[in-house]
Image (cartoon, rainbow, N blue to C red; front, top):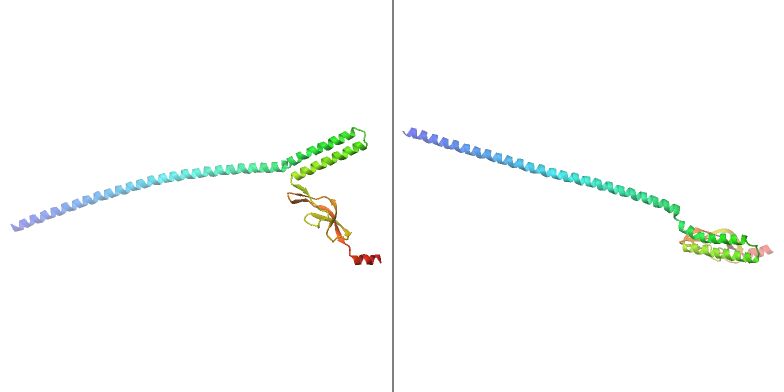
Amino acid sequence: MSEIKEDKDNKSGNDENHEGTLKNSTKNEAKETSDKADIEQADTKDDAKKEVMTSDLEEELQSTKEEKLRLLAEMENLRKRFDKEKIDLIKFGNSNIIKDFLSPIDNISRALKSISEKEFNEKNYKELINGIEMVNEEIKKILENNGVKKIQALNKKFDHNFHQAMMEIDSDEESGIVLSELQEGYTINDRLLRPSLVGVSKKIEKNKGNKEKN
């Protein structure tokens, strides 16, 4: 009797163990299935996020390319405009000063025409001289208005920056003084435009002069 009861107890225990094992196995399978689903869901979210990021990057790249092309086009247009302005400046940059010279040229033409239509005499000669002097003053004013100034050379110390010596002149003056001006020089906005062509003093040595007399 006791052996039969023990067998029943063992069988009952085995059944319980088996049932527990089945339950644990089912739980593990359910957990694995849940974990797998979570992983797949996370992967799906990551893939979707990557697709969005890729799409954003592609749009940003396209926008950058378009902006670069626009800037390049603007730079090319600016270059063409600057080139045109440079050419126009070279061709027409002196238009204003040339236009200013038209007035004195007209005055000279009128004066010459007036003299040619009349008998030339002393009165006409004086009128012509006066007309030339007026034109000369008008031209000087035009030059001054455009930054052109005459170099003051006579009786000044020779300055190689503004003077060009054409000859030496024996003199009692100290050497290197401008005594004559063969051609006037000019500056434009304080920069040399044309040097004055001058004759420069050369001091005579007195002893040398006495020897030559003896």
